[in-house]
Image (cartoon, helix red, strand yellow):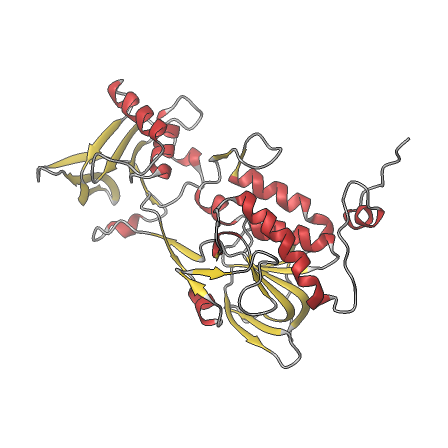
Amino acid sequence: MTLAKPSDGPIETDAVIVGAGPVGLFQVFELGLLEIKAHVIDSLAYPGGQPVELYPDKPIYDIPAITVCTGKELADRLLEQIKPFGATFHLGQEVTTVQPQDDGRFLVATSKGTRFLTKTIFIAAGVGAFQPRLLKVDGLEKFNDTQLFYSVKEPGRLAGQHLVIIGGGDSALDWSLNFAGDGAHRAKSVTLIHRRDGFQAAPASVARMRELCERHEMQFVVGQVTGFEETAGRLSALNVTGPDDETRTVPVDMLLVFFGLSPRLGPIAEWGLDIERRQLRVDTEKFSTSVPGIFAVGDINTYPGKKKLILSGFHECALAAFGSTPIIFPDKKVMLQYTTTSPKLHKVLGVESPVFD
């Protein structure tokens, strides 16, 4: 991975990719096969996007030819795959403005003052700039990143602790089962708290949670956190008020909160694109937005029949890359070639062409 170096003037390029999640990384690959080099911008300090930020150790089972991998492993494999194409990464910054120029290019500026003159833009920003929905209890925020977490980045840090998990979705259930299990990250105790005895999670996970509760291997408490206790400056217990208005005390060393994400398009909403329910409308021929030269791939886009799968995003990247070639190479006819047989693609990939008898 190549990180950007300071630049005085605008960086001139054929393509800028907004978002370094799995789909943004694969867009680098599809553009690279067409000999189009890209600059990649992401608001996070590292590539990988939502899978790395929210569930780096959670298994993913629906990536073709990979039986199972974690979000972190998927990002690492994609970074390895795009090495031959020399993409430059601009991390820890958000695109703030996009201005069409008289010559057909776009002037792109970021929150850190980096500027680009680019022929095309590929928006692969997932759900946009996302923030976790917070547990709103006065004073609790002082434990952020020491005892209170909204994602799991270091599971080992939570092992052997009295762990409380709040939420009723898949993330809350999955991590409860993970830390209550017999793996290397087993917690000393696991207590799941949800405001009601009903879940928006996989039925199998809910059934497994109830089974572990019956065997006293974890606890489930119906209620909402209304206060907390601290000892020697550390969070030591939560006050949980149930449907009967009774408040009980739940000991805690570490607290995980999974209330979901609050997505926002941020500055993208000001770029003059056709937006439907916080998503960018695209065609399904080349995944172009309503502005020629700006493409949208992955969870950020919408079209009839859209399915929010990483697999779907990968497919969209291929068509978007080919859709960009008349803009980037207006005088060149670009033909579809296959990586199995094309000497030209083998050269681009830096591999030897196979010899068949």
